[in-house]
Length: 142
Image: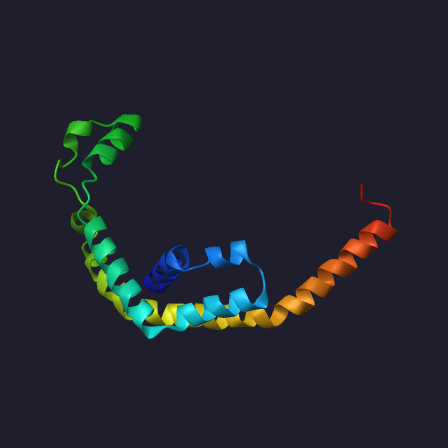
């Protein structure tokens, strides 16, 4: 489950969501859903995210760990200078493969949710208009 959450976060960060910020039409949302459903893009994203997470496993953690030890009043010299996430948490070595395997499914799920948003947009616009009218009728607008 933890890996699924990690994959979902990575997909959300990398997904073509900026389209939605530029153009909030149903067509833009539908294009985003289609993009997220693209199996070629899903595989490329999965490979890229897996490679990135693999590289993160070998980032030196010693400088940060020393700073934390010092702040906690401990001797920073006790920290292994070669400390990495892979060393500290060996089970994290499975994360890149899990991301590679699960990210396409996560992106497909995001496409489905995005499609649902497209279907809801007319109702959301109507609700926003009703709320605006209610605020104006109540004399709460400037």
